[in-house]
Each structure stands twice: as C-alpha cells, then as structure tokens.
Length: 297
Image (tube, rainbow, N blue to C red; front, top):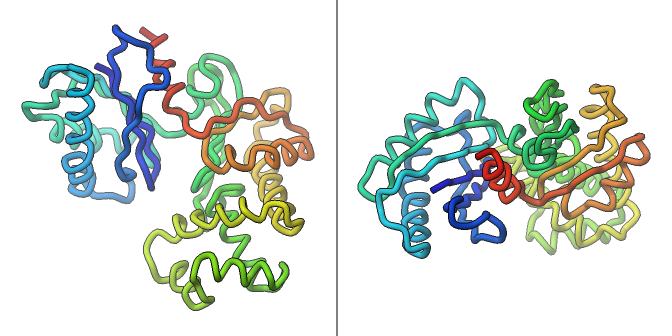
C-alpha cells in the first residue's frame, strides 16, 4: 500500500492506493487539518494523526477490502518539512502508525516545493512554483531543486499568494484606492468592520490564513478594473522578484495551488508582460505525485 500526502499549513490531502492493483487516477482523496512541523509541536502533530488520519486510513482500507496491519509506504510532501524536521516527522508518524490497524513501511519526508516540482515537471527541467496561501518557486533540473529564491513569508514576501492578495485588497479598500461600493460589498460579504479586520490581522493567530480567505471576494469581483489590476500587478511582482533571478526565461513556469488555478488567465497575462511562458497549472499536485511514484517503481 502506498500513501501520498500533500500538506499545507491549512489542509493536508491524502491518497491511499495499491499500486499493484490500479493506477492512482481519480481515486478518492481524504483530508485532515494541515501539518507544519516548524510551527507545530510533536504532540500537536500526533493529535492530528491519531484523531484524523488513522481513522480515515482505516475506513479507506476497509472500503478497498484490504486487511488491517498491511505495511504502508509513505511519501510525504509538506510545508515546513525541512531536512532538520525529518527526524521529528519520522518519529511522530511511526508512533501514530504503531498500532494493530496501521503499520508503517518505508517513509520519505520532503518539502512541498519538491512535491510541486515532481508533480509539474516529472523528470524534465523547469521552473516550479506554488501559489496558494503562500508562494514559493524553484529551478528544478529533473531530479532535484538547484535554486530557490527565498519566499520570506507573508510579511516580507509571498508575492502573488492568497495572503499577499488579501493584504493588497485590504490596503486598497481602506485607503480608498477602490470604489466605496467595493468596500461596502466586502464588509457585507464578510460581516467585518475595520476594527474586526485589524484584530484578525494583528491580534489573532494565523493572520496569513485570514488574508488568504479573502481570495473568493477577488474572484467574485475580478471584472472590476481595480481588482483585475491588483491581481495582475501582484502576479507580475511574483515573476519579477521570484522567477527572474533564475535567469531562465527559456523555461516554462508551472504552478500548483488554488490561487494559480482560480486566476489562471491573469497569471498568463502577468507572465507574458514579464517575458515568461506559463506551462502546467495544477490546483493540487497529489494525483500527479502518485503517478510519479508509480512510474518510479
């Protein structure tokens, strides 16, 4: 049995399959809350695995007609899964899997960026990017990441991400760079006042998630010229600050993530204006990662 994980700080997608019986195309996914070992304690991660993942795995095994205790090979790709976090992740997963129902086989822990590169480029050279709650990019040689422009997070960087777009939206609304009708529509849609917004950004946990949660408003009002320009400008900043440093305008630039998926036409526009060509866009990399590992065998 093979288990693939694509984890962000908000949500983790899981795909379990038997590679000897079927290719993992259009198989059902299941989900847990996100895991980020940099910001989560060992106990918090174990809680997610024990209360959410193990029950979901058990149900999936039962639906597949598989017996309990069959070893599971894990390929995990996640936010914050740096080399210095691998020992922590390995230990906590082995503890969670160490029961009569779920048994651990081989385990591999990698960054979400390598997952994006493998899903998008497979074994070809290319530029792979993430545009979701946060953003990131890398130059990939078909085997490994050779260069990475630091993303720097939602305060200093993350250009083009959901959090970046949300921050730009709030700035434009409340500094009167957009029509007052848009601000009224925003406050009605979210039931927020300026005081509420300030509290969510400066006093409540995970402000990046809150900022990214405003993307649906941008999508709904994308035909407004001020919103359209805001999004294209943010994407142009992503290309200028994160992709141009690689000096490889000859390579296609491919993306995973909800922001890239939902605003794909504007992403193409921004890429063209910055001298780049967009390659593949995937809302989620997990199915392509499963195929990658199937063909590795």
